[in-house]
Structure formats: structure tokens, C-alpha cells
Length: 90
Image (cartoon, rainbow, N blue to C red; front, side, top):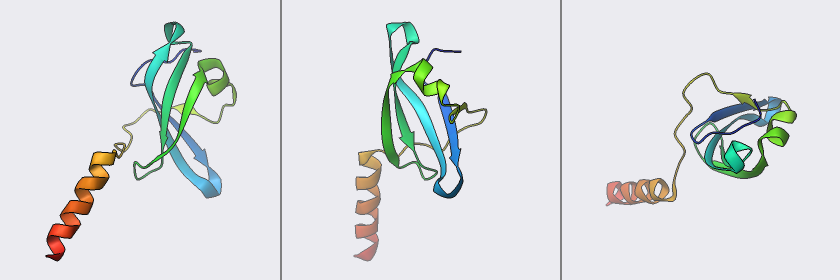
């Protein structure tokens, strides 16, 4: 497979660095290129990949995920948790 599809999920395990997850959020050129948001096990956004499906898959570091991944944190999630913590202290 040398194509991306929106919603496709990937996983990479890097020994001492831990496990990372990728989710395809946009595709171009009939799926041959795309954008992937890379997160850690807590759902924190760590990086973004933008490029060809062939190059992404060629490294063999990333494998298609065969299970549900943790949800990705968003800026509003972080702001909401700060607000909740502030409210509890009052």
C-alpha cells in the first residue's frame, strides 16, 4: 500500500523513546501525499509529517494500527483542563 486515506492510523515504537501514533488528517494527489499528526501515548501533539505515502512507509518504522489509538489533545482540551483545575482551587 502506497496511499494515505483520511482517518488512517499508524503506530511506531521506538525503544527508549516510547510509542507514537499518527493519524492522517489530509490527503492530496489521490492519496499519494498527505499530512499526518503525530502524537504520544497521552495524545499530545509531538510532530507533523507532510509528504509522500511512499517515503513514510518506506522506513518501515510506522505500521498500520490494528487497534484504537488514544484521542489527540487539542488546544481547547488543554485550556479546558486548566480552567477546571483553576475552578477546583477556588
